[in-house]
Length: 502
Ligand code: ADP
Ligand code: MG
Ligand code: ZN
Image (cartoon, rainbow, N blue to C red; front, side, top):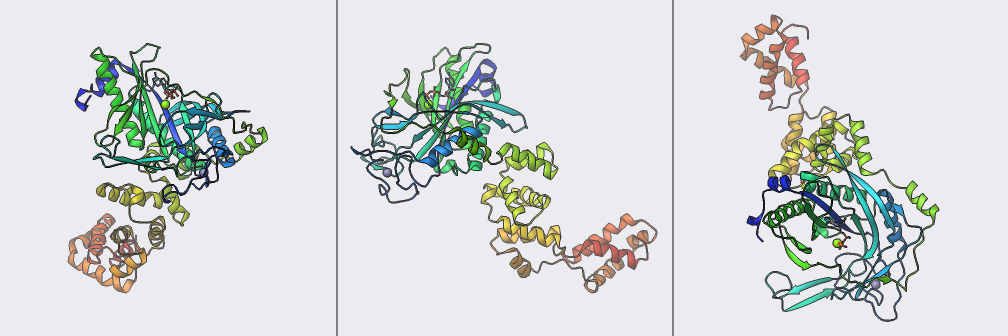
């Protein structure tokens, strides 16, 4: 199936109701692996961070990572889940070269957290509640690299390399209940959910949740049904989608593809699919018509996990302020409207603004620079705001110079331009470009006299009491001083020279 075989998005949603299920894997930021003491540090020499336990050698015995369990409980609590009184690990048996034990230690019918929800805010401010089925603990697999083929895939490769450094790194898998009722907004809900979950994970400090580094990845399950029908349609499962935008695109593509198949009388096969960044399409992976038989059974080498209620309550009490509430509080503190806060979030500016405030800037000016000048620069250069080459400390310095009256807005913009162009720190740009507000009367007086002499008619109007006309003379002085004059002082001097009261 190619992109041309899709039904238009509008037609698809006019005829069908989408149902989604999102499975998100989060790699925890623990120092050691889930069941052994091997380091989880990235970038090490392949297979240098392995031991008999994570290589599954006979006779080795796993031990649960306490921070892994603690992180799982924190995630469960933040997702409003119930926390199991008692639960176990299970072996999920399957053969795959990147899994040295030939089973993955996971949780099956006894997850540590279950029955929760996450409220997510859509772009127009509406809040959508996503129900959470479960969050369970498991471990990551190793990594295969296929060598010799053109595509990097196994087809056409001459040989494969295996790196087990990642095998055994703790993962938390978070599974939603079927998401119904999102309608045309289903792709947006999917994206907003993953975005909110990522913020939550970061706020909890359990993982950096960097999707581009595979620390968080999402499987998008999707099916369509005729409107009004209760029974779900057959789903497809698009695996390992690793950016927010791709989550949205994958859901959208699958809606259009399913609709094209169904409306032409075809049937959807239950299968996994691969997502392709280049054109936003998905292609067929494994057929999964019957539930796979993983021969799950309780892991005999690990003791059950029975978190004491006091510990769970302690963790609940210690949860940080959660992202949605924090955003609400900031919005109130700053006294801005919903849509203004929403554009701050959409621009990815919130953390930058807060960092700038932490460096001493006030909220209004931090917001103004990031949402104005710097957002424009990001747009023009096609980069993310966070990647614009200026630091919150530098923005704070510019705003301090404005607050002290050393720079006006126009000069401040030039300073920022200089910093972005690699001319150094704000103070260096100020010195090198000679950007300073001139407020000293001897320097301004001459420029004011010149402006009055060159604009006699306007000067007369002002003498006659038309104070609004002073703007033209102030403008002339600003121009003559290349924008560096202190406009307030210029106005005072103009009125003084013309003998009128401000
Ligand atoms: P698996 O482990 O095979 O992926 P799960 O039962 O864990 O299966 O379901 C995966 C996700 O898909 C869950 O989020 C679930 O809510 C969702 N889901 C289940 N059935 C459907 C369906 N027919 N359409 C859309 N989503 C579904
Ligand atoms: Mg799945
Ligand atoms: Zn190990």
